[in-house]
Length: 370
Ligand code: IPM
Ligand code: MG
Image 1 (spheres, rainbow, N blue to C red):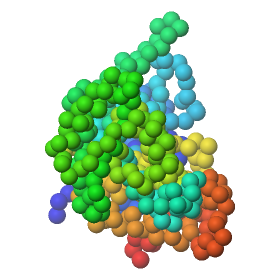
Image 2 (image 1 turned 135 degrees about the horizontal axis):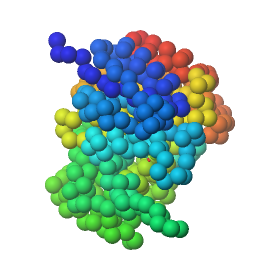
Image 3 (image 1 turned 45 degrees about the vertical axis):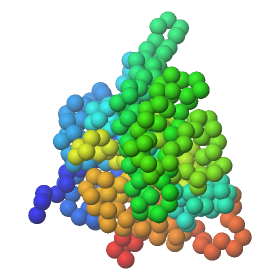
Image 4 (image 1 turned 90 degrees about the horizontal axis):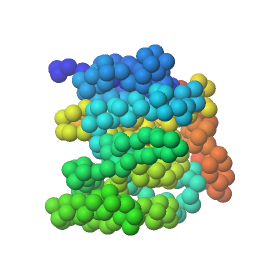
């Protein structure tokens, strides 16, 4: 038998350790994995003085995949330019591992449609994928302060845009093959103002003819933000630059009822290890209480199984188990109706049962082997 896949596990800060511990239980139930737990973010600043050490980055590069919880928290929040910040760990990992393609699928679980702050009829049928460019743009351009002024530079090269455009077109093609829907890529930019966006639009349009089966449309980011809540079901694949993707994916997450539901995969060159993490943050306000929602991390583990280990069957099993526990009404506090959404509609058949991280994990494991 081939050796067990080696996963570097980076719990990070806040609720990170709780949700990652839950995901470890899930992985251990699914098979043989060698799990190597290391620190990142605030935890790493406390232990090593920096948010990511070279040694841990090397371990990640040498792994088969990386599973991450979340980084950041008020303890390390500072506006002092030279102080270490937890987020540097995550950004350093993305850059250091060459993870330029961030995939964030948004598919509301049928049981949660009523939990979204948006009306049911608006989000019904939503099934979209945000493809976010992850190692370029304003996140990684020159930045600094001089006197009373600060700057952040946004830069993109044709090569950076080309490769993420190809990722998006290919993802659209694959999605169409399995869903039977027409493939469409919506490229989001701010080409009416920004030069980097005009280059983005040019290059995406140039790649498009290689994918004649995929329809391409361009949207300005402000308009896209509006369309995303007014007609989310019309989107298929959204491809956009780093900062726009950060903002739009949080917005899109709310279509699923909670930011606590959204998984992500960050991928680099073929054959290189990917990074799998929930889209939500470290939620320091609820850390340590045992109530964090582990489902986005489970769904990220499912993406790891699919994209990292070519085990689509196991990935689908995890996704089905998550849907099943939600169907039965199990809810961590973030998913309860009334917190974000209007009170239950008359006649809604499933009563909600409030659970914590551990009960939710037990239920998913039970559903997995039911
Ligand atoms: C995300 C997060 C990160 C980002 C932060 C924590 C640096 O918001 O993954 O979306 O901005 O990319
Ligand atoms: Mg974000």
